[in-house]
Length: 539
Image (cartoon, rainbow, N blue to C red; front, side, top):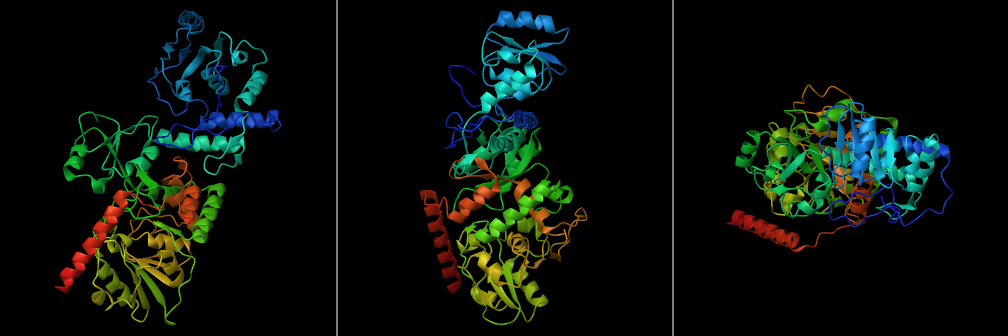
């Protein structure tokens, strides 16, 4: 960092296509932070490893303790390294941005220019530092007897900015900004080993790329090419050919499954509306009960701190109050009951969807689900809600109205799922996410298949729940795992990865209503398919 071009120590990573680039708009006008506040911030910055180019590439480092040298004056740096090395290897940091915290991870001593931000990071990390030349960080040199006081002064100046929330534009404290940087660092570090992404449609890539970003551009590929020789590959399996999946199985790469998140978008994936939330699972995938998944492990083991559970309660309240579901926000209008008997909502699904194939067990069709619900509740008022992707004409699972009404009392197509959940006394599902959304709203849920939320003591389960699911969980614990810890979210306004609360508010506000040419074409295709299907039945 040059004294002639000052910048904030806390910065927004350059995520692909992000529209907000900076937190701050100059020096803060408020009173300087006290020494005890600075001490807490220093500890938090060190714990979260944020500040500087913390998203940058991570160089291969020596296996043992080393002296790290990064200075424009090579001869001076080498001479100083010779004095302090004491037999330890010397690592010369090359040109180009590097993650400073990674560079320091095994360093015994750092030699850096006094105007290089690495010097500040070294001081914050409490790694012995020798500064070369003059600059804003010269006082952090190990030979300075008053180094701790100097660190507080230098750090205070480095973070003294007016910080604005990148999602709302409202002022934020430096503590909140440090935590947000830590949130991004955790995401970036989780992607460090990604070599490529396979099976992602071109219309998904702009919103998925920031969520898979590891400091460099994501390589979206269509096959397991020779360039992908190691590391991990993010794969959307339902959109990847069997031959490519087989090639990946025979390779040395690790396959990581990616799927839509549980609060996805304001619009359908079948209409090519890009996802604003994804899940990235390195263990399995949440809808396949035959094997463990990262989500299942989170629900089983936590951790569930009081702070996390409080946040889960508040998020659940926000979702319910906003009428938000997977594909957008519903209407606050309440539906009227037609009769006095027990009302049961039966949401349909896409019958060839992987969640049905993996978790549906003996229930492989929407008609079979209706039969089973009617058999268990012969006198109830059954409301059948076709899946929106099926209704749009893109996916398998349609039931002819006359056949459906032999079992159901009513077919509801246009009402939002949230309004139907509010109306119902019970919700019966195969593996539908509507069951989870019903739990959020305090409704009794019966599962005929094995969705991710079955087996934890919150639902009546008729499917074969894996014996692995031993824990009994509260609703807030389930919400914390499924909505706070597992998915990743993208803010459609700033273009930045965001906490779920931000996306819920965007969806509730109706942000990013799809109007693109691809979306319109897909909707026309869906209408034509529905027309052709009905014409074929009539014939």
